[in-house]
Length: 600
Image (tube, rainbow, N blue to C red):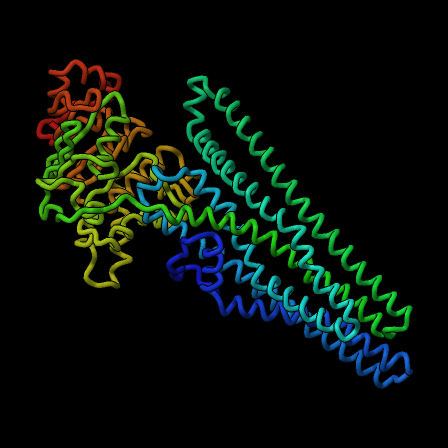
């Protein structure tokens, strides 16, 4: 049975941690059943070896019957060979069980994060998601050992107890009552471990978020002189997490110590009782040998039972965290009105920004966060009274908004993979969502699709002035790109993000500071090509660069998040001192527009 990492994981169980673990078992029950059978037979045959050894001693060695001795010895060799084969099958099957649980949990978490969309950041921290992906997934998959060795341990324990009955009822009772007594001793520690583990995971997620925030804002913090302050706070949080880790380790160490020590005392008691019975002549020498063998064979199931309890205690804590994440709901989409059939005006009453269809509009402000908030409202990433045509944006189904309006964030994620896939991932998604802005570009003949896709990639790269990036890479569009494109420079990443946005060819493109990391020459090239590529399309740019503002049809000068003046770049330079002061620092980069230049 193979593991398909791309199949539908199915609707996950959200009622609780134990329910989620049971769901993982149900989703692959044939494999789990096979693992339980292999483990059970494997452990039972471990216990069968002492039985065969006792028969070899009593019926072959003691009476001197070489034929019987050879027969029972051959049986032990055969059982050992079969058990070795079963051990391989057991390990291989349980590895597949763990991998399936791992992949399935990753898929349901990533899928749910995708469904949450923009609501994810407002409901859960980045550290929480990272902790689930890095730690909890592994813990959950490891806990599924209970369905293989755990079940096998219970079966083997019962079988050994039954075999002991044929030797001595007293010994059988000691064996059968021993593990329940171990559970009574270790059980409270398992509950304590769950509490400590839960608190540890919560602190770990908070610290992980701090690490991400610190790494992302290190340059700014260093410039403001706040690096030391934040470092001290992080050091304190790290120390508290370490102390909590010590507390988790203390409980775990007691469980492991008792898990090793108590079974040894229990098995020593069984051995001592067996020796006394042999000395009294109540059991034979062969039966005494079998008792020793049963004691050794019991070590495996007892160890697995204790390990199973430990893994399940940790697994249910991790599963509860996954379930809590899966219970998060995206912002309700109550839109029932259709989006405008034709290009229409986007209007944000809170700021007074009015975006005319088919025009290149720029938002210029001294506070970039004000422009970002406006783009988020126009893209319906935050609640607002924005309208699209005569329809409130909030009353339009979100799928229609996402299919026709694209917000290109300046730090949008770049996933690892070939550069062509990194650029084309958004286009593929929007086509799947029924993006009417891209569907008209699809060739009628499916055999032409690869050629059309490559041409579209090259066109988007040209518009973003990013052809040099492709030429500089050893394998062009097939060159692997690291996560967040760490193997590219800041300006290259920005142009790749812009090319990705342009490739989708949305009806409305809202972009924040798309050229802030570029030099003046490259920025001028992007400004010209962007205007040409988006001709006839609605485009809104949040920028203060004169090179971009000079190419815009309409510029809104924002003060305190509201429109203070509207006009062309040249008009605002002549009439608005505040606007002139805002863009003056880059004014020397603006070249005079030639007669007939559409930027005039």
